[in-house]
Image (cartoon, rainbow, N blue to C red; front, side, top):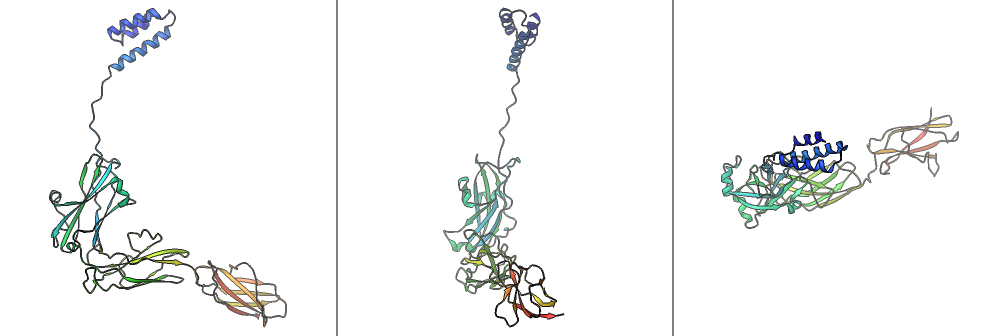
Length: 392
């Protein structure tokens, strides 16, 4: 018992030592040394915990979204379109999960600004720029497509003023504590009057392409003539509610027609054309033309096989041919009839996928006429190629 109390006294304070030691000697019977030791260690631990050192207070972690560096601008019809990526990281490297709003700023300058490419000092931009849009997190879905925000500046108060000014834009990301890492990169644009959309869009399908045609606009969107046409862009989608941001042509098409070679059968595509105007890049575009739905169905017969021959050897006719040049051929169908007969019969119910066939269902002394057709994957048959049996 003395050993237990002594061990306890090494860890407990003077007052606590005397009181707890007295309790141990009074309440624990002799012979319960193990319990006494365990309780002594427990009480010592409580005493030590009460004397633990409190850690120094740490400053709160700042979660401020990084400023954007990929803000881009282009003209569409008589308004400006801005695109920028949603921030993924904060200034401290953590994931950007506290974004609560995006603010869009515009600085207007008369004529063609001399410093358009380099931008203006951020302090000057802050003083002179006007905040034209503030989008809260609850409205992000209206502006966000996957990871990219798209904003529009439509100049509703004075649409004609856009052609006599250069406009500089920047955006700021704001967190839930109303903090920002600063403005994004600046972009500038000098809008120009561009032609109206093309009209009269039509389409015609073939085995290899969808041929589009349209009529050029007759004037610019401000009513001036002739229209300043730099080409056309072709947009295609399978969802009529949303067209992609990029056309299917890499460069503006100069003609009023286009051959779409990259398509699938049994699909409905929706096409729209824009007129491209001006010389600046990215080039300004008109609004989309009227949307044209095109359903692709393979009703086009394949090319027939070539060099079809029927060689009689004893009581068997050996049929040989060269393949059809069409890429979608699934096989061949061969018919036979007696020479001068009125009824033809297939030599086999299934398609023949080889380039030869042995017909042993013939009668000696009779002559036969054969007919072969190529069949594509949609069941379309080519024009027939005929051959009569030859003795060799």
